[in-house]
Image (cartoon, rainbow, N blue to C red; front, side, top):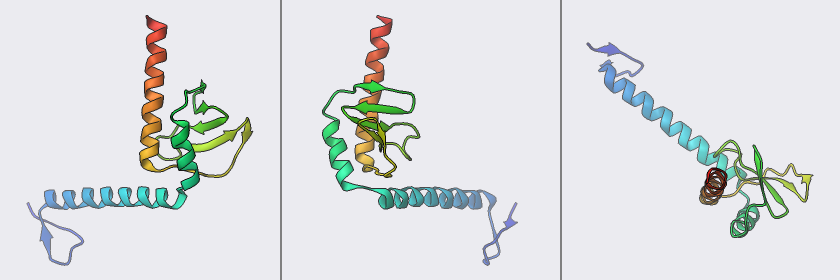
Length: 123
């Protein structure tokens, strides 16, 4: 069955229109994600967080992770993930975000840390 849609061409197969709608949604989500990351990116914080990733995690909370004096927001992966939340116990409202690759490294470090804690508790 052929169904008319918003295209001025006339009619189009419904399976193709569904495909087109899905592609448009995916493209818009990807574009908004990258626009958000480019707008909020902070090179200095990205560099510092990469340096911090070589140090051990000192404290792991429900929403944040502490490495040294830096408390990093580690909830809402990948949106506000990696934001500098507190420094030396004082709240910071700076909206500093690292690059996507640094966020992925941070995510892997936290995942490895959580798995090591889980193994210690079980065995």
